[in-house]
Image 1 (cartoon, one colour):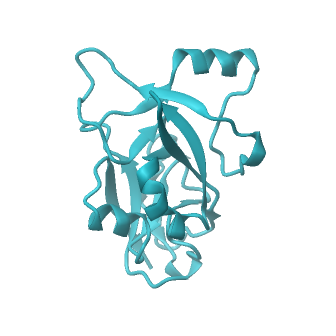
Image 2 (cartoon, one colour):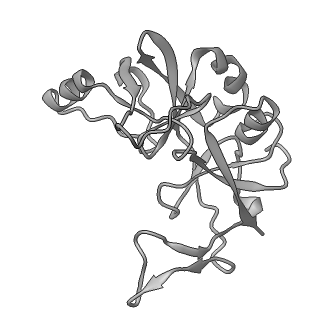
Length: 193
């Protein structure tokens, strides 16, 4: 494990940058073959084929800025081929780089394989509603255990839902995005104990 000081929840900056979606033809293929692609932490391996994507445009509502690192749906980050060589050295331990076709350009979806058991139960405060954990906003305060984080490049946390995390380790996602001034992602610091 590389040294790190901070942990961040990573999300796409959907208010400022375009998102990706499967093309209508791609959606038809997936529905017809009953093979909907999901990113659930499992390796796609040889079952993956190039998926055709396009920018999601909603007339009058969509930002026009194209990101360097894009979001695809709610769960995947996508990078163009020229960034793959920069991202692979650190992220290949925790991600698969799955090929996409964006209007003839090669892009790669980052399929995150890491799910770490890192929630610090003692310092995490759940958001309760009517005696139950709120399904939409699960945490009032989330704290992660620093010693439980084994690979900080990009990872999911067991029990944290669709949130994606990274550390500030050298060569990790946060470091790459900040040092190369890449656009499209937001980083929100998370409490680390």
